[in-house]
Image 1 (cartoon, rainbow, N blue to C red):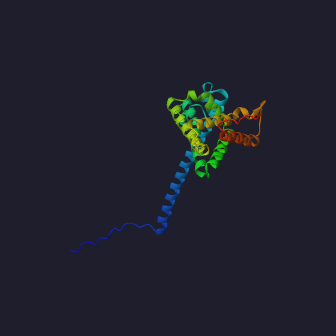
Image 2 (tube, rainbow, N blue to C red; image 1 turned 180 degrees about the vertical axis):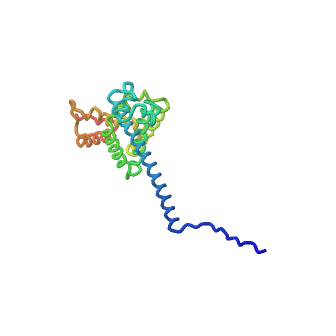
Image 3 (spheres, helix red, strand yellow; image 1 turned 90 degrees about the horizontal axis):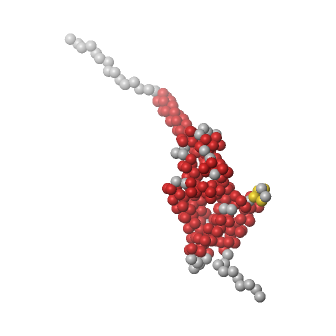
Length: 239
């Protein structure tokens, strides 16, 4: 007997146009998912930064101990409990604020020195950089001065380490301009200059009125450079 013929079942093949459309749809969906993820990450970063900015203003005005998480949330436009999505608590907010500023100072100072042509240019760049920081961040300077002791122990140690590295950056530059001077004296010059520049939260106000940044900046820079380059001994008085 002759067996009935069997027709081979071939796999279905999508037309090239259909495959291309499917691939394009997958790519579009992946791009859309990535864009949504990026937007969420950016929104989260923006809220975190808003909380840090609010913390700087409130801590400077009221003091760390008198500000609640609800106060921070309200100032940043979120509920008090929502703060916990970004920080473990109020002390963590303070730590993040002072750590980020200390890191920014060190990184910015290193870039200034790396880009400068010689020690004198590096010193001028560091002074301009620090003056700009002080004029732009008076609230952070107040918080550093009055609430450093409220940092957690680990954060205190890390902030101090970053600050010491920043000071040594200045000391290394000053060593090239004051040959043979002991490092201790160079550190004193650096610290004295920081004190002068960081006084801006108070010195830029006169009887409740702010002195314009355009006036304050060149004055602070010239005073700082004069202090950093002053001779170690006073000249003999004239007869």
